[in-house]
Amino acid sequence: MDTVSYKTLSANKETANKQWFVVDAEGQTLGRMASKIAKVLRGKYKTNFTPHADCGDYVIITNAGKIVMTGNKMKDRKIFSHTGYPGGQKRISPTEMLAKDETSVVRHAVKGMLPKNKLGAAILRNCYIYAGDEYEQEAQKPKALNLNDLK
Image (cartoon, rainbow, N blue to C red; front, top):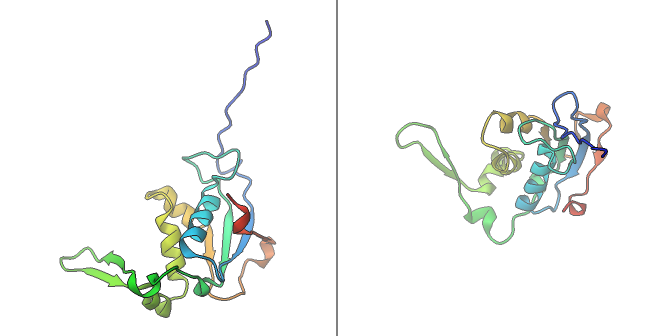
C-alpha cells in the first residue's frame, strides 16, 4: 500500500512572502476597518498562517483623519490610559485625540486588535499610518486594498 505523507508548513521570516498594500481610510468605519487591517497585518488571510510568526503583510493607511464612528461615539466615547502612577488615569475623547494627532485613533484601534505581546508590537511596526494622501513607501509599489472585498 502506497502511503502519502503530508508535511505541515510553518511560515517564518524567510518564507513569509510579504506584500505591500495601501488602504484609504476616508469614510471607513473605524472598528470594522481596524479589524480587517489587523487580520491583514497578522497574516490570517494567508494559507500559510502561523500564529507564532510575523507572516502578515505591510499596510499603509492614508487619510487616517477622515475616519467615521457611528452614533455619537466621536464625542461620547472615552479612551482610557494610565501613566502607572497613583491617580494617573487619563480619559480622552476620539475628537480630542484627532485634534492632537490625526493618526493616533487609527493606531490605537489597530493596536487593540493585535496580540498583547512582543509579536503584536513587531506586527504593529508593519503598519504605516498617514493623515493625508501622500506616503513615503512609493518604492515598494504597494497595491490598493479594498477592505469591503475581505470577509
